[in-house]
Length: 278
Image 1 (cartoon, rainbow, N blue to C red):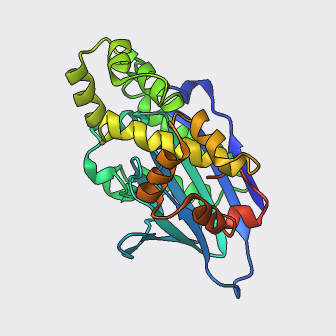
Image 2 (image 1 turned 30 degrees about the horizontal axis):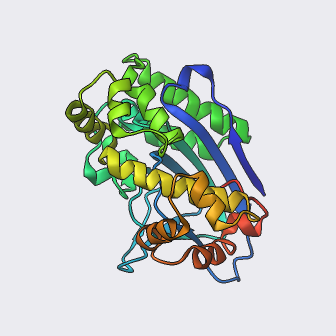
């Protein structure tokens, strides 16, 4: 079993936050492995090098099989991911608005909860990169392959880090500490200009992004610190009280905090003893 976050080369840090690579083999005879997946702000690109995954929308029950290479914007609904017992996957997690810079196009609402087939929107080279990673003899070579591909793609059009990008990272790190007006000021934009550009590069309004991000940070904090009580978590992540946090759980996870956590304890990474993967 292998599970690891990889540090990035400096050249990619303007658009990539981190890589996550995991590889596991469970008993194929056991029941399906299910990972509850509530809302999350990250944009990502995933490569299923072995095995696959289906996503069930929690509210409607609709199911879709994820493409072997997919890109997605922020997740605004809860899904339950049904993963195969044999799984080998690389996740590329972008900086806020990094997906737009990587794709060199605006992020429309289609990308939200989208898991869009990357081979449909990128050049055929992405398929060749996938095959190289499948056949790579070591995990490090998988990382080196995707690293080189991303650098080759973005170096054709240099990525400039502007005040807007810095404000986006500030929103991601501290969603509850500052107002939209402050983020706009840090971006050297008017409020309307900031909202318009944020929607264009993130596919979601800044106000809703802050709500999703605050909830996600509360959820992750509890996963990684099981001994913390819910009131402490609520106050640490900017909620006025526990009731406000519980209301967001109902909207964003479709259930109560403790019920979601009970389901999370049966997800693959928890069964393997990992608590950092959320």
